[in-house]
Image (cartoon, protein in one colour):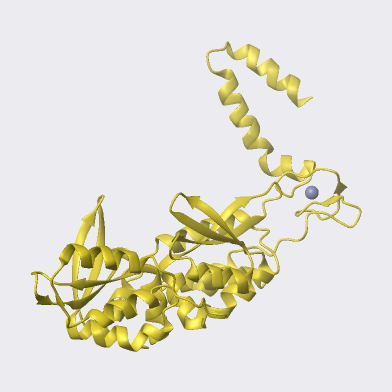
Length: 336
Ligand SMILES: [Zn+2]
């Protein structure tokens, strides 16, 4: 098992970790504590961080869902933060601020709390010119999202990636947006969201940059890269179903992975639905140049594939509460 790099842990801490100071009584020396939390079904990263940095794991239930929390404290936390602070893009300022206070005696608890809260909202400047691959992998594993946004009338999927962050934590999405494109939108009052339409060329440029360092979302990224290699997402429904399956797949230590190559093979390399004149080619018979297709099929092929079921369904819904004879006439009439 490869151990995590400091850059990856920094990215993951920027997304899903928190840094804090402990000082139970007034006059007591402050010590550092770092927390990470993930759904238990996806807690592989947490286990790997514990392997490298120590700390204790506990489980708690929030809204019926089990979460795994890793608590790294005191000297382990100080050691970890000193090692990774230079790679932090978002929480660097706050990390340095907390590290300066470690070992100091805290007398004014409320004042200290207020001071730390204000420092937490300070930006870590300058924003990195370019996000390092491993930092981005950690950050994306924590806060990134890949999804099929919509399927258009030809069945093509539109794949979108998004990262949300609070208004005072935008350094990460700013550097990503600057380097890979996309847009940052106000999402809720206190949250901003970066979104990028991952058309195949963008998927290769963005995911291709850091996918090999991912842990929690590696399968999803590899799958999309496999689809992008075809140059299109025309088999939208298959892609959507596969991505959904990958999202619900557990990522725990010693859990076996999904065979991504096999999954990519289920995605059909469908031809373009229209020619240069703007006429559609049937995906089945390839012969008809028609102005309209349904699911890529010409009229003839569509009825061949769906017609019988369509009429069966039609018969079922239209014969209910009706004398049989009348419906038979109707179907006969329709068939003419
Ligand atoms: Zn056809």
